[in-house]
Amino acid sequence: MRTFVAVIIALIIFLGLAWWNTKYLLNTSKELAQEAENIRKSLVDESWDQVNAQVMQFRRLWGRRKKTWLLLVDHDDIDEIDRIIFKIDEMVKLKEKEQALSDIAELRFLFHDIADKEILDLANIL
Image (cartoon, rainbow, N blue to C red; front, top):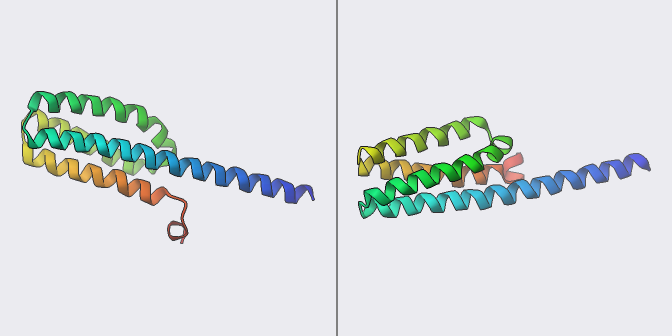
């Protein structure tokens, strides 16, 4: 009987952590994608001072979220996000609008894709 109770408790803990993981990744990926979208809008308007400020704000936000994401997500995905953010920062400094827009689109896709891949779902298990 003790074994059964221990298994049930472990299962409840596992499912609770999986639920929290899913909720956290979905919320933060949505927040980060929205910030990237704000940068995209400013880029389209070519408001370069505003874009620079937004990129710096985005880097600070990502720095805070990255610490937890490192525990939950494959490190290769984190490295890819870091690489793209660095490229966006450089393209904005060079005022390369088209390349920056392309990188932002890729970044937004990555945030949504990573969150979708990490959801506890039968399709992700099989």
